[in-house]
Image 1 (cartoon, rainbow, N blue to C red):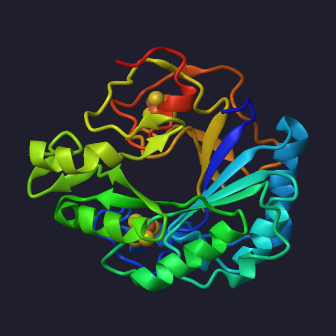
Image 2 (cartoon, protein in one colour):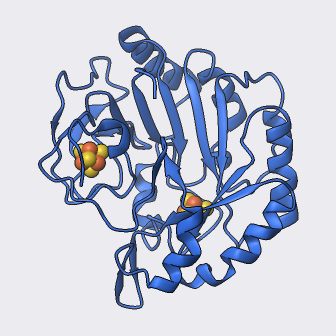
Image 3 (tube, protein in one colour):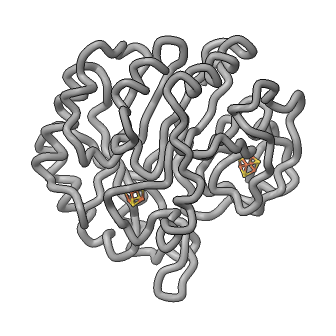
Length: 279
Ligand code: SF4
Ligand code: SF4
């Protein structure tokens, strides 16, 4: 990790899939009221203020599904002129529009394969197009949701036949009355552990790490922006601390790191942000 400030930006709470393991499963209707869709000019103005204050940042686009955000190609092209931009996507839409006039040194797509909805061949063809333009690595995420684990190995082999690595992302939530990721069986662990995804070189958690009380740069060197511009310290945390609004002229990150107030760090942001050793 370099010393750039970084943000995750939930562009909108809209997705064309309905994965049962999604953070937002069962909440799409309630969350839709936060979808603001500001003009591109207002968006660029807000991120321009961030650039003036902190220099070029890393902005990671999430959702919902970023690719179905209105005028997404225009947005990513404009945003990446002054910031580094990455994007997690289900690759459910054609990528031809993103292949040109986009700086591969500043833009990266990170696809996740959702087998209940995605067409395998179409997904691979889109990823290979992005990869060919230097816009994606030959790596795909796969949710280690308990009912999907038995199919992991066959999908891994199918992707490997195209030179693509399939990595397992741990599921955070309840399934069958069991809380995950702590509830993975030995058999499930033996399937996913060799292929666990990582964040900045640190493997995703199979045993939830305890982070409460530890000094963390979330809110100071990193923050999460919601679709209405509301900024919180970090994502996935059970306790998200409000920090103002990106569209406010006076928005600023905190000056100092603060202790973590969450029991766990399910999005693995701790890897780059915690200032203390985690057990
Ligand atoms: S594709 Fe991603 S955002 Fe959409 S429902 Fe699935 S997990 Fe959620
Ligand atoms: S350790 Fe994780 S949950 Fe805690 S403040 Fe840092 S980023 Fe947020």
